[in-house]
Image 1 (cartoon, rainbow, N blue to C red):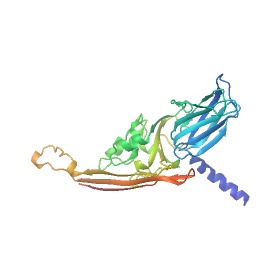
Image 2 (image 1 turned 135 degrees about the horizontal axis):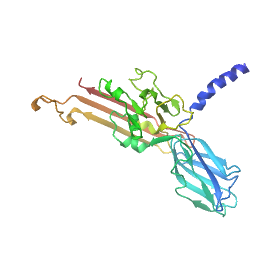
Image 3 (image 1 turned 90 degrees about the horizontal axis):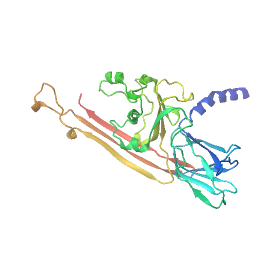
Image 4 (image 1 turned 135 degrees about the vertical axis):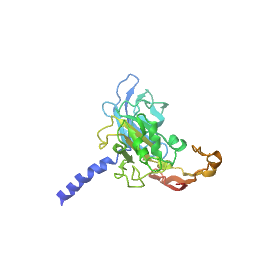
Length: 318
């Protein structure tokens, strides 16, 4: 029985590890004003939206690290006897980032506090991948034909729409997520949703989509497009990686309601070569995409959620 249990653990352990891809890491080194390393300093990471705190201490080399950090804005405090309390706010942590926040402690009392702005490094020097983060504002405010968030992957370098998928599409609209990265086929891309494999392995599956689940743009917190030099943990990919993180709730309740409308009456009359202008007609197109989102806390500092509901109705002339 013990051998069977151990075998099941070894079989399931890789799956558990694979589900950590959407989380990030916050790390740094603590020194004093003479650049001497400060060991055994108390470091606290606070989520500004949920007030959840995580604590650690620096090692002998003055280094600290927080792992499995969710996307969001954070406050970091560092305390040590003989030094003033160090505080920095609005540390943005993006999906799969290795955000470095180094600190210098000033000599003083722990009851004194020194607040530092811009302590987080803007340039990521702890990873080698070439990537682009598409944030919440870009996802919500940039125009999207059909409300497909993966179209925004074209904002990254070396990414373009697959011409082959476009030419084989009956409606002249390529399947969702059909883009080439660094010249590789669109089927070589890897889609992750909250760290879970979200690849549709058959082109006829899920409404001719590259993903098993196609979340609404309003449900996405942000996503990262990694085009090259990604680490071996991702695997199975020769093209690019689209790593999306779903929104989570906060300690405050909030929500949205929306409708995106496309209608024949709002369209211009297209030119038809060889026909008289009097015979020009507008092709029928009625599309209504509407939905609601609501987010909040289930119990303070312990659990939060942000469910999304959407519906789409459309009518096109054939």
